[in-house]
Amino acid sequence: MNNSPLVSIIIPVYNSERFLKECFESILAQTFEDYEVLVVDDGSSDSSLDIEDQYSKDPRFIIIRQSNAGQGMARNRALDMAEGRYITFLDSDDAMKPDFLKRTIFEMEKGDYDIVVSNYDFMNEKSDFLYIHSNVPKNYSLDGYEALTEMWYDENVHIGPWAKLYKKEVFERERFKSCYCEDSDILVRIFKKNQSIYYISDSLFRYRIRNNADTWVFKPRTYEQIAVFDDMYSFAKDHYPEEMVKALEVKMISVWFHVLLQLPKDDKRAEELKKRIKKNRYAVLKNKRIRTKTRIACMSSYFGFRVVRYLFGFARRTG
Image (cartoon, rainbow, N blue to C red):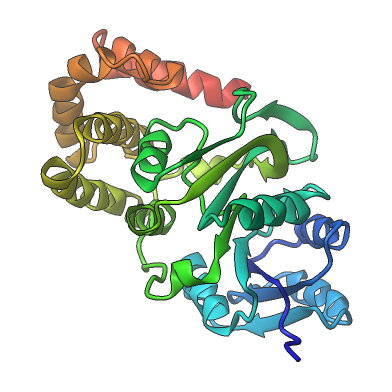
């Protein structure tokens, strides 16, 4: 008799005392109950540890503790231990809606998909609803190349590993890397290999936007994602269809703006990013699938990068 759970829920935790109970309670509220919860505490120093101990009384909650190694390494630790047939990831400040597991498992087994992707809501720090990620009112299947294209255009298939259900075999030879943008890196590798994906238009997940000023403070590793996307692009030009390459170009210029807005004004690397943006913005603006935010950034850059900093600095200040 097989006593293994059907689903392994993987949660990396680092100093998440403000939101951890809400995260855990969203699991206990699931309408499907055959799961294990692998909580990997990545060196927390706040009351997250006490909250974890409280929920460990439920035998489905397995608490693993390690010295701080980063979110990707915490997820890998849990992947090595997971016993479920299916895998899903949940960040410690996010939450599942009650039917997330039931609906994603149903679609997974009905169509024998490798990955099921759910639409999701954005919420603020008070857990108030802000807006839904996508308003496309239909469910549909797609292959890995189509999923990558949508992900780079920031359309229905989103760039994070969360709000998705995976067959365990998807991770048989894949693990998160210790890099700044480990989320997009592993999804690129996974989508290249797994061609059977299903998208659910109903929102079954809640993703939290943190109003934390630290989000916009430059961190030394932030610049690493430039090299990661450069490598992706070098590969894509020789191996992917033209539409996928165009999608990646849109994603890259979005990343360049994001990093530029965080760099100190006197950082020499800012000039290199400005050169890249100037060289590529016209081609990106001709792409009809470009998102409004990226279009505004590209258009405003023609008036100078001070205008870009002002517009997006104002957006951050006003929420």
